[in-house]
Image 1 (cartoon, rainbow, N blue to C red):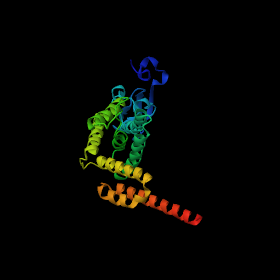
Image 2 (cartoon, rainbow, N blue to C red; image 1 turned 180 degrees about the vertical axis):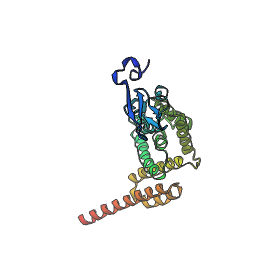
Image 3 (cartoon, rainbow, N blue to C red; image 1 turned 60 degrees about the horizontal axis):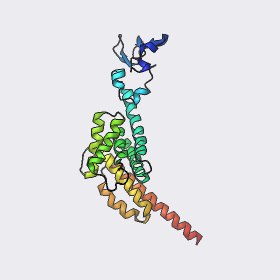
Image 4 (cartoon, rainbow, N blue to C red; image 1 turned 30 degrees about the vertical axis):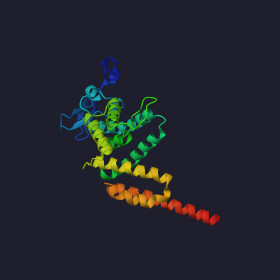
Amino acid sequence: MKCPGQDTRYWKGDAVFEVPCPECGHMVEFFKDESTRKCKNCGAKVINPKMDFGCAAYCKFAAQCLGELPPELLAQREDLLKDRVAIEMKLTLKKDFKRVGQATRSARYAEKIAKAVQADLAVVLSASYLQDVVVRPEGENGPSTLEEKVAAAQAVLEKLGAREDLISEVCEIIEAIHTNKKSDTINYKTVHDAILISELQGRLKKTPEEAEPLGAKLAPRLLTETGQELAETLVADVVKNMEKTRDKHAAAG
């Protein structure tokens, strides 16, 4: 079945229109289902300003439906993908709040690091959210295997229509993380540091008095300067909160 929005049987009088080329001002004629056209005057690639790219931002068949997608739309697809991965992770893990919390914290740190080191947000956030989304059948216990972890992440990304190269890189990062393999890619380093800092945060909630020794122990394992700065800030905040609590108790006493 053809998408109704691209089926000429449903088109009205405004299906063909003209827009000025943003480079030279020459009028460029568009059919409503064309994502881009080349200006006949200057040769610039002009994006259809009236086209609704909403469905194409998440539909895995968008490339076949719309032809070659413009960079602006490809960026939008990646941006929406990471949000949909987060939702899918929560739907998959359901009431496993421990793993949901771990994945969410890791993704939060990954985003901060990624923006500072210019890592690929779609890759690092997908890897952070999907580091362990294995769901055991009811009654089965025990840790999941590496193969199960990678397969579960791959299944989610395939379901969401992610690019093959993105799926491959996310799976490689997850495998490297769980086998302690080192990689020189900035995407791996980002996820690696984000997970370690997230684990540190989880431990400090239970034993805040160990903030400084745990922070010192973690520091040499972090692979990015931003990760080191985030870990230092986390430790400093915990120590500061403990000092405030002590002062309050002393004043009350």
